[in-house]
Length: 169
Image 1 (cartoon, rainbow, N blue to C red):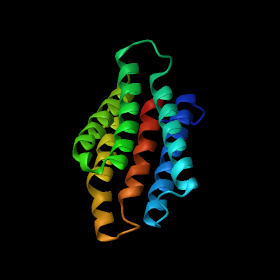
Image 2 (cartoon, helix red, strand yellow; image 1 turned 180 degrees about the vertical axis):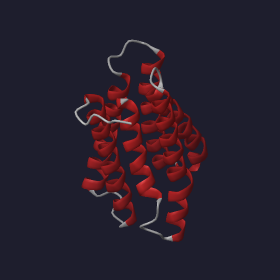
Image 3 (cartoon, rainbow, N blue to C red; image 1 turned 120 degrees about the vertical axis):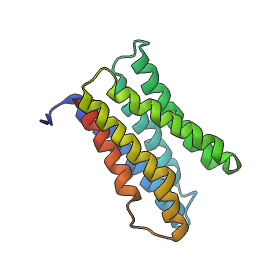
């Protein structure tokens, strides 16, 4: 498999994923250090999270045309953003919004491989498995056990790299 590093979709998707990753690290890092409402981790983290997801959705959907791919990309990205924010603000409803989070990731990852090669579809589903495994299973377990440097965040980061490659094929 040959990857063209000058591919605009690869660069835009990778940049969007990097921005989301930085936002998650800022937000979670601030919470773990007891600075939940610090302006950098709180406000900047939120802005980067929303902006990164907007760039991801745009880079996957391309020009909005009402196609199923666009609806899944924008809808999935919006669902991830809203469900994450809702889980932070309404912890009592975490399970419901957790299901929305999972469904939104499925929609978004499916849109990446849509209208593309079999390799692209497989990479986007691998990214889906990696991100859900990380966010739903491994990272919560790491937090419970007090583990800082476990496999959760590398799995999360690799998901965006896989999505960028899948989107560029």
